[in-house]
Length: 139
Image 1 (tube, rainbow, N blue to C red):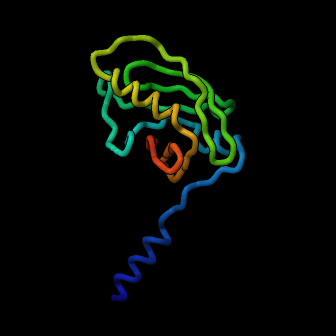
Image 2 (image 1 turned 90 degrees about the vertical axis):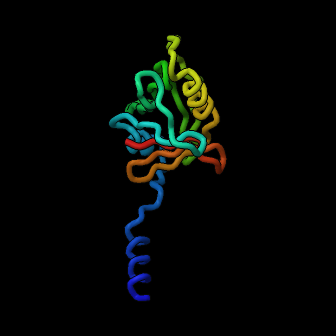
Image 3 (image 1 turned 60 degrees about the horizontal axis):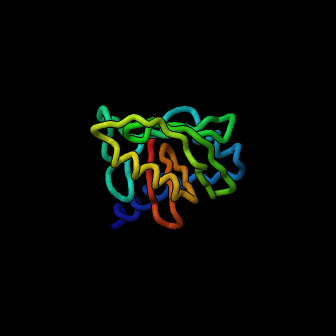
């Protein structure tokens, strides 16, 4: 019994709560510095797109700018941040046609458009629509 209790206490002590950022600059610093790779979309493991690649997000530390790969095409645009509220502005996207990745691209664009909140924890970034996780990324 003691072993179970000790194991539980150690697990709880080692778990990290979501990182809460208080300003837009804090958010940009916490998410910048490399690509975030999609690992889950709408509660399911993320599929791959063109070339067997997963969608990515990259945040610029000096501005409210985001870019990435959506499954077939590249995208870029802005976002607004206030506390835990995150909204992506309309994103510009290249217009290539791909055999693989077009449906994934639509789903990724929809998830980004529905995003209104975020959580950053360790190497994970989760985007939410209300209380529903729409996408999870990792570095």
